Length: 563
Image (tube, rainbow, N blue to C red):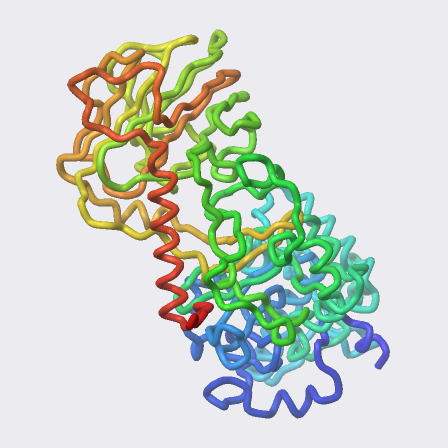
């Protein structure tokens, strides 16, 4: 049937029939339609989610017949670990999954009732059809998060997009008037739900081409593309900005600055000017080649497979700056990455490095504070909301310019003197922990490609982290105005990694100084501190230890034997 051959949902050809009945999963069992199953990108076998080490907490919301992801079973994965990447779905893909579920529901209903009265078929064909307003739209609304990574729409204008998609794809979908002629009914031409699967064949063809693919996923990818990634056991899934992966060796050699010896000029601070921003639960870390990792085999990792993320590492700067990605995009960061300006409502930015023990100090000078503007300076953990004032949630502590109020968990209390344009505010934190804490290793996280550079992508659950917060006795945060001690603002704060941070309201401008020399030295009674600039090298060393331990544990170290 020509329509079926043209449908992009069929990733397998004449061998499908045998493959459906053949052993699929690790358990050697057949497919279980109506349950969550994942198809391997390499062997094309279907695996039951219940048989995998990947759980629904790793994949996020799921439904049967979802088709916008990339999965490698542990037999085919280059890391010998199951890898799962959830991808953004086009409306075509969302509708294919929707129709597959509606068809399966209808088939179950027919099997149970053995009756034809519930079957709504076109009088001219045997294609089951469904009501857009009563069945298709309600199903998408109910399962939005499982169907796509896009944010749930607050307005119903997307209903028109569904209608447009159904009408513009006659080789995939079918429509006709209902029996009473009052509404249009829709169906999917290929009613075999076994054929609803990821479009792996198109991804491989795109990778083998010169980059001129014209499938729907390519149009949606824009600048953010899947380049590599694998989820380790219990790891985080990728997702928020991904599109089809795969590119030819020639294309990779032209565009991927991270994976070749090609030099692309970076700013003096070593971070690309164009980059993805941390948003909601998704965050990104700039990746660079790891010289200590086992080199990838170009023959083994061709365009149809994932480049192993263990061959890269989180890029660390030898100096402390304000973060390029862990900030609200509304904020304007100067080229020196030390001066930041606000716009409109409160927005937050964190530094590039963090601390978890000892006593550290930094200062920030108020360069401009027009009328009705304000700022909050202090310390924040990585889960602090970038679209809120510092001290809004449990992950931040701040000292506000207006009236010198201190904030934590949105509770304000009188504290010290207010500050304004020209003042320098110092922030000191003391955490008495003595044990070495190794930072998170990103080598089992998926890689994405953005503007010719690679970034680790990970999902973080702030609610879960908030429930695990514990008070650290004898810890405290203090502030200084022009070197004058304002007193202890917070005592017995939560333990964790803290970043210097500031949130700005309207057009306020602040410049950070992480040391080692300061404009306003703290009062003599608080001289037992370290400049925060020292965290640049110490955190880089800690990150390298964490990465090396991963390579050793997974036998991925590039060993050189010298006589």
